Each structure stands twice: as structure tokens, then as C-alpha cells.
Image 1 (tube, helix red, strand yellow):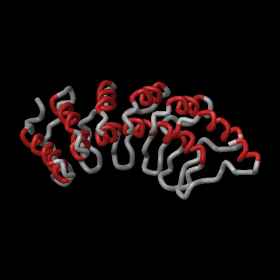
Image 2 (image 1 turned 60 degrees about the vertical axis):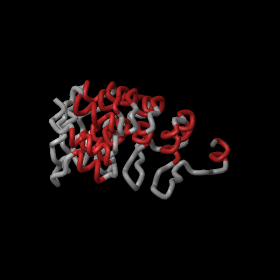
Image 3 (image 1 turned 180 degrees about the horizontal axis):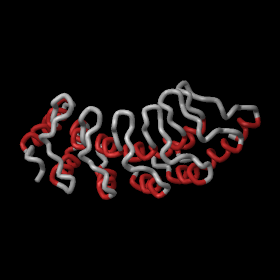
Image 4 (image 1 turned 135 degrees about the vertical axis):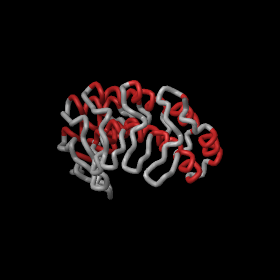
Length: 214
């Protein structure tokens, strides 16, 4: 990197989606490279053209806690920075199942109940990815896993669509006690979404256990 910079390479050089080198270094956890790029003029708040993600979003998505901490403390990046659709770093950390990153963001004041443009919260991201630890962490912080997004999907709908059998069981029979009979805006239950996604066995189980998990 130092050799490239010495030859005149610009830190503003971006990929076809408008993502600069800082985003790549942040997502890979390369803190030394991140610091070098910023020292040569890279802007921590720069967002890519495709989604509006910043370096903080990429670091959080991949659980790169060292970079996340540096961006928050040394680069004064807003902990709840929004992408074009309103997605926050904590949403992406939950999607990646990175509980320690979620805790780090929360310690810096991140809003665990924040919603994006589609009314999706961290629980929707975590459930779609099948991250039981992230869902448990959110539940422990009082985030309602049964809250519906703009499509009427709860965490159970997302987990079912993703084919995450164990998570579905916990969402039904564990502390969240979500009702599998709840339909989304199109009248689809979690079982219907599981079947739609090709998870026939899970769909049958959800249909058989559709008494609300209580």
C-alpha cells in the first residue's frame, strides 16, 4: 500500500459500486491499512453508490470489532449511520450473527430498536440469517421479536423463509413464544413462507405446531 501511494495511487479509487479501498480494508479487519488510508486522505464517512454503506457498515457486517471501535472512537463515525434504505451498522452486525459487535455498537449508543425503510429491525436481519445468538441477545435487550415489518413479517416469518429449523423452534417454544398462525400482509403464515422457499419439512412442522408455541 505504501508503494502504491508513493506511485501516486489515489485513495479515492473505487470499485464499480463506488466502494473505496477503505471499505474493503474495513470489511477485512485490516486496521493498519484503514489507518494508512485515512492518513492519506480517505474519508471514513464516504458511502458507496449502490447501497450507501460506509466503512462502519462493512466492518460491522463482518464482525471486525477492532475497526468498528476505531471508526467510532477515533473517526467519530455516527453509530447509527444509515444506508440508503435506512439500514444501520447494528442491523448488519445482527445479520452476520456477530453478538460481540452488537454489544460494542450498543455500548456506543446504537439503537437496537431502529428500523429501516421497510420497518425491518435487527431481529428481522438476525432471524433471516438464522443467528439464534443474535436473536437471543436482542430479546434479552427487550427488542420485540414479534414486531412486524412493512410486509407483516415477524422474526418467525424470516426464520421460516430462511429454513432455520432450530431458530423457528426457539421463537415458538422459547421465551419469545411467537404464534405460527400469525399471517403477513399477504395472508401467509410462517409455514407458507417455509414451503415457498422450498423447506417442506419445516413447513409441516410449523403447521403441526401452530398453536402459538405456548
